[in-house]
Amino acid sequence: MKEQEKNRIQQAFKEKMDYDELMNCTRCGFCLPSCPTYIETGQNEVHSPRGRIALMKGLVDGVIEPSDEVKESIDLCLGCRACEPVCPSGVQFGHLLEQARDAIYQTNEQSFIEKTTRSFAFNKLFPHQNRIQRATSLIGFYQRSGLQTIAHKTKAIKLVPKDLRAMEKVLPDVPKRKVMKQRPEQVTAIAPRRKRVAFFSGCLMDTMFLSTNDATIKLLQYAGCDIVIPKTQACCGALHGHSGERERAMEMAKRNIEAFEEEAVDYIITNAGGCGAFLHDYEYLLREDADWQKRAADFSRKIKDISSILIDLQFDELDLQVVDQIVTYQDSCHLKNGQHTFMEPRQLIEAIDGVHYVEMTDASRCCGSAGIYNIVESDMSMQILDYKMTQVKNTAAKTIVTANPGCLLQMKLGIEREGLSDSVQAVHLVDFLLQAYEQKEEQVTT
Image (cartoon, rainbow, N blue to C red; front, side, top):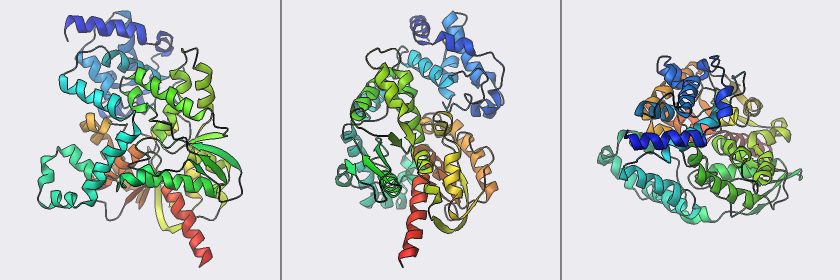
């Protein structure tokens, strides 16, 4: 790093880091066994939560200088927040990580390609749902037109980088853009009405994972919810916040608060652990903005995961059934560590007739997806995934259930890498529940 760049980064750390939060860390080491990168790097302290906090504090205090090694440590963190529940001092490491990445990425010198790529993704693509629809519809065209088949038969797919080639195999079938644009704004309950909720449909969830969003809406209807889906909502901003683009994340937060705050609803329902945790953190994100602090707090208090409201509405007491099978569950890190939702998905899964539930060893350890981590830090991501798949195989499960789209793709990738695609499937929790509900209903009516 150039001296001028080092000075800019050091100053940014002094301005952006929450020093009181840094000081809360007592270096006790309770976080170490929970940190995937600490474990996978052979217990390297630099890649542990307390090690990263020591680096952050050292930069603020001027004891150490910014370096490529420091940046590598911050980049290699998954941001899974598994260190938070086990911390006796309650250190909010996820907030510190976002502040550190903001300090680095808003001040360091970036190559033209990196600067252009980040600008396109964070400024031109994700803030605009219509552009995400266009981009994902191209994937759908590739899948439906026969181009995908040709690419594999001719081996042309081998021209694509190995990591992206593997991901291409496990992408869901993407609907046509026309279907993506025909989204409802109001949906009424099928069962007797018990709640009025809003649904946060997300960006990729409402395009690439559209069928899962539709399944979520159906479950809410079956559970007795009237649903409002604000058309002006936007990307949650998690990708921005986790990647050092906090200002843009704040803009996204304000757009979403405005979209939902006029709706008289009991809860705002999410079905993606990563989105839900970031939405829940809007109160913290906008804590220093006097005009938005209360509005953000009101918004955050209404965030609720789909599994939580289904338990509240006794959905697990309905007749649910699937073909007899062993099922295991992979926690979404942010659903567990950010939204503190842990038992609800398990309770719903175990309520299904035909399910023999087997808890996976280290089910709550990150799968290595972590947003775009499996693309930008592929080697570590695959190392973590390999461990995860060993635990899956030990359960002998036919079905892996998870509650986050990134986790779902990562588990599908693990199945593909292990050659288990003929015997094991990965599904989103709501898709599995809808199958269980409608299969039982179908039996009743025939």
